[in-house]
Length: 267
Ligand SMILES: Nc1ncnc2c1ncn2[C@@H]1O[C@H](COP(=O)(O)OP(=O)(O)OP(=O)(O)O)[C@@H](O)[C@H]1O
Image (tube, rainbow, N blue to C red; front, side, top):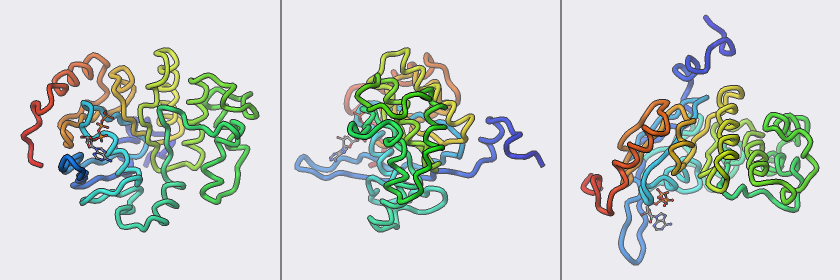
């Protein structure tokens, strides 16, 4: 039997346990203008040590999918297993505790706390989870994201790309089941975006993290192992290790007028 660390990343992915399993996930929002079916029955397994991108036209349900999978929103029906545990059955308090321990987040706007130093920002998830402040690990992560000498600075003294590196270190500090990244390169120029995507890729390949990223950018999606396409609340397609051109072509077929090709699928 080959030891885990001796396996190639591609081999590991084939045998890895699921980090996230979504089954028959449905979520509708009812407002003054009627009911919007944001997710209409999504089934999806994301294995440990994989990097997935979620794409789709505006309003196709990407954020809702991420929020339900991360335990930030509750689906109307269906299940979300995070590390094998059904989070749809947890109370709000249990969910908050599980999220702090088991989920990392990277946002478009970085969301670092300006009053804290860089290393304090990285340690914050451990603090919130009531766990030991492992400063050595925080510094090691800062070195891994290329910021070995920035621990005692404030976020306001860093560039956007550097702030997003800090956010990636922060997302990894608890060794979460999964890191959800919502448009992590949306506020960055293309060179800096490449660096940040390279770091997410390295987190998966070298640190065995599991990353799920929502993006509108085919070039960003091409860093993922797998690109999932949503349209009108349904997973309609996926590509494995595609190049940016193939992703862009597939997106073009989905981005039609409102009430386009997927409008008639069952609600
Ligand atoms: N809190 C809410 N209340 C009402 N409707 C909502 C709410 N959140 C999302 N929706 C609706 O659900 C649908 C899916 O929204 P969602 O934000 O998941 O799409 P998205 O693919 O992330 O879009 P975008 O790319 O524009 O961010 C949309 O029609 C949206 O208007």
